[in-house]
Image (cartoon, rainbow over all chains, first blue to last red; front, side, top):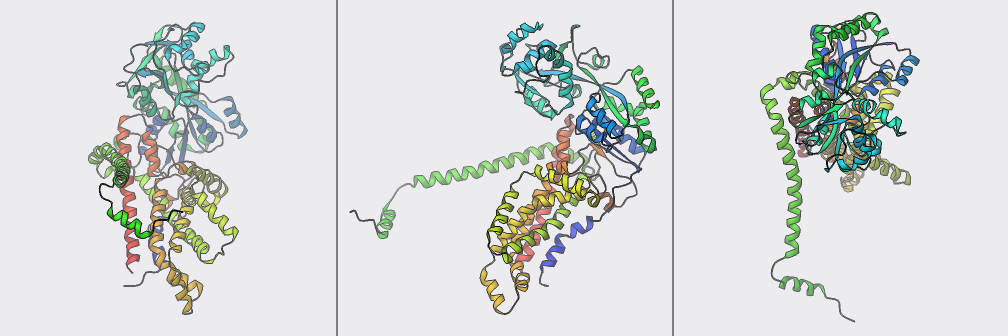
Length: 325
Length: 309
């Protein structure tokens, strides 16, 4: 047998590599669509993209979901063509886009609700209003280990459901990086905190996770838990979770597809895609993609991904926003 | 002054002692328990993953391995992850193996034992313990941004180079240890019959050290194969869906803008809400483990070949 040498060893090790090496440049530029942004919207866009590329093979489409904020950072840097968003663009982000000469159109494509959740085994709490939620998870609630620790604060705020049960309060919810957290703070905490001169944030001593499955496990694992999560995640896990009805001033409303689509449920939020209009003019394939997204076949993905369809009137206004870009 | 017991006395006492060796038995039991505990964790993990994933693998068969990513659980496969992971591993081996062995050979065979070389060695050991996310930031800054014109930006080449840098310290340390284990007599004998330093290293030292170096390479590959955090920063696609343009060759596709890797797919699927993705996650972990075993087996076979000759 030939005596193996070092070179032989190296060649053998590199054998796989040789088959896979090779330089290339960054793909077909005209025929690619890059999408990033909200992980909440990602499932809708991914389904649309899959259907689109089934009909348009040869177009490189990629859909990522790092989060709305990260998505806008890349979008306003001109790196992506479409940015998924679970909230409207912030002024600071819009200023970034303007600085970099990125012009865009905002398209409302679906509606999501935030479900305030507890364990399915929790029978003590059925409905909370914004004051209740502020008393339990607001910045002044820090250190409350039991629901009834919030009694005094709830009474002071005039919360409709205080006093609360004497039971451990275990909170599991999305962390600050999440669009769901932003929306929750904006809808529930911001006004009350502003009035009271407090920081517009939740308490920091809760179990924060970016992984919705971790939240579902944390909530279902404790009988007197409290948290909030996107409606799609709640709807997937109704066997272990219970949605607490929310009182936005007009009585308790349970989250459901109907109450979210009509925005009757106080914690519902619109979902958007932002399209770079200059790139849409440059790349016909991008305009085709958005056309397809807003078609009946494209918007069918909204329900498939577990979100709530837009009413027909809203679909029309989205379409006219797109056509008048 | 009391006389110290002589060795003979101690031996005699020990030999005369009868009865149960309590301390010894307790110690061996404790040691056995530590072994069983770590085995138990491993077995639990494997059983959990296999029971979770076997349904998907049985239902889908090869199509799970040969299908691309999809947001629809019933259609989702790991092909893109497998291709990405194999290509990344290949780049890691291509870069880290020659550079790592070269650096180790210099440190062990050529460098004088100065304060500077000791400083370098200590730092290589420190680098081996740096969290992988830090290498991800390095990869983003250097390979994606700074050298973007060479690597093409967020490409698999940038990702592979990032992982190569990540495993380089481990590669150097294991190769150094392998070279240090080669008896000095071998070097002296070789030099004694007139071989130059290079000939000695090339024909005597490296062949003897090679099996151990290859073992280190196996560990290196395993580390690179399982990493996800640095790749997320260095540009791997965290996505339920992406496609490549048509009409590009396999080579171009790998060096194209978009790539992902098996650990990234596992991470992405684990955070999806649908129950079906939990089974897919387990199945993807099974695929990852099988591939890892295959790569390790190949390296072990290679090592044994060199050991026998």
